[in-house]
Image (spheres, rainbow, N blue to C red):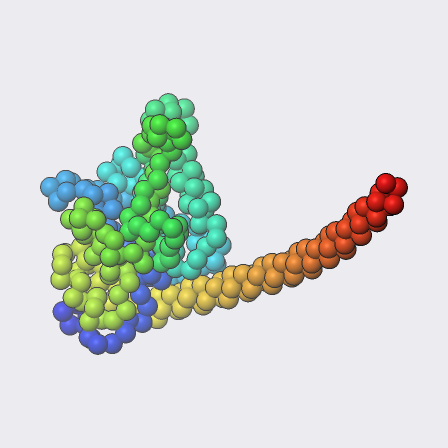
Amino acid sequence: MKTPDTMKTLTPLPYRLTNDYLFRAVFQSRPKALEGLCRSILHLPPKDTVTVTLRNPVELGKRMENKEFILDLAVTVNDSVYLNLEMQMYHDNYWIERSISYTCRSFDNLNHGAEYGMVLPVIHVGFLDYDLFPDYPEFFSTYKISNIKNHNIYSDKFRISVVNLNQISLATEEDKSFGTDLWAKVFKAESWEEINMLAKQNEYLQEAVSGVAVLTEDEQIRQQCQAREDFEYWERIRENGHKRELAEKDRKYQLKLDEKEQELAEKDAKYQQQLSELNARIAELESKIK
């Protein structure tokens, strides 16, 4: 079995951790790595005892339909917080709606007959490999329900966060102190050398990287990783085709608007010419009457 110290260097990773199947497989099979990621995301200090329970395990290596990929990792931390972790590579125009839907489903976590005050907080974290809000670049952003006038928080039990893997350079000192930027770098790493260097930072990263080494040698896991990359490739093709189609419709619509504006401008010019000629005729008649 390979370890982070003996893996090949200067060679590309067969699949990066941004592959959502590998992401799921590594953190499902390596509880210690999952604990480390949860500690980092929730900003839990090392002295705190953390118990992480995975709520949606799958049979690794088994073929899964695309529609079954509803949520990558649904975990409970210390039996007191529901934490959703989702890896998203390609640009999803409906990510905001998806993230709200995921969070709402998890928020409905009361047992029958329990009081509403017993509902557990839900934190949904999306690791996105694109800018969700290009005008507001940020590495780790968090959103809550709040009053639009005075920004008073409606509830602390419903939270959606985004870790932008394209904006690691914007990580704050607080992000760095809990190693969130390191996890993002591990997810984005493309070579064994890069990921091995990052793994030396702490034991949780080492566990995750060791999981990558083991799982990417499993043929069934590799097949599922490739299936996900193929799916995302065609999703991007479809999305780009849809964008081109919309762009072409916009172009044709703009041409029609331009033609209509030109037609109206010509009619207006003709009207102004006729009006000018009429005014001149009226002035001529008035001069003859005088």
